[in-house]
Length: 192
Image (cartoon, rainbow, N blue to C red; front, side, top):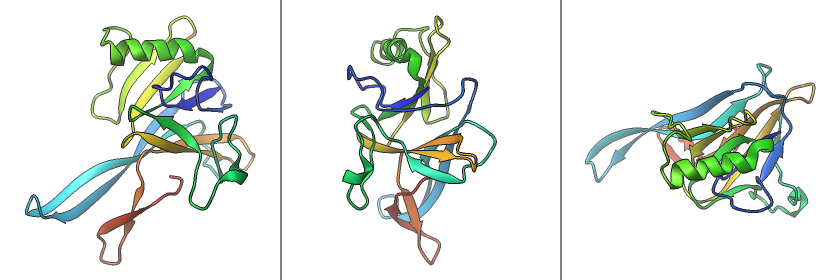
């Protein structure tokens, strides 16, 4: 079972969202967008690259349909227009983790990130994924990634034509809208 949550979630209820996936190694990817704009503070053209989403690819089969990842108490009928459910974070962090090892992985995450203990986690350079830790007893892993701030982040579950989970995507930043002249502006929310 895959847990998707803010690793700073200290709730006794466990992770915010769980999705049944087959055990094994899965590919973790980040979607990036390059944005260029004329910046008045830099007095010139500025180009930056932002991560907009992280994806855990469960299979090589592409997703043919998408559904919102829901927690145990989430009822989509209660959502208004442009509202979503997701996981909450107060530490600008999300994670994918083995739900069966959630408690021990959560403790390892805290020991590494909060207390700075060496040897309980691995920082991953040059990426939005800043921590990977493994519970040796269960073999479960947690990979934490940065979000753009505190708040709620939607989780999208992509299913194959057969209905199997093909990928799980977390939007960490809204996608910029491409304007007619090719510049970017505004934002819209959609699954990656």
